[in-house]
Amino acid sequence: VCRMDGNSIMRKIKKTRLESVIIKTANWGLDPDLVLGRSVASIHQKLRKWSTDYDTHVCGEGGEYETLTLDSPAFSYRIVLDDVSKVISPQ
Image 1 (cartoon, rainbow, N blue to C red):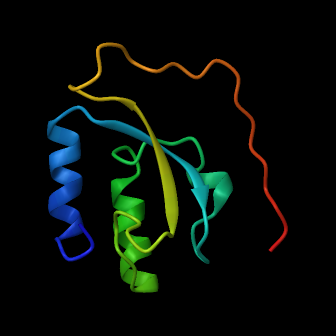
Image 2 (cartoon, rainbow, N blue to C red):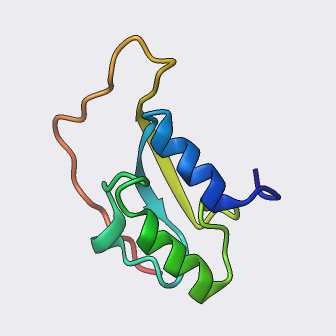
């Protein structure tokens, strides 16, 4: 994936109804308040700008962010998160 075009991957994610949310950030420029808990597809444009500004992979393939997949065509059921909280650790 790291050698593939990230924007192409993002388009495929949108087409296949894959829903992944960002659960961790580890990169300067990705404000946890703006991205944690948001679906990757819904903030694709912000991730594109971030990847251009910081010369990183739009899909986070360098460990810049981590995701949790909540729904996929391969799943029998969607994962529902009932109770969530943000924890921001000092650098």
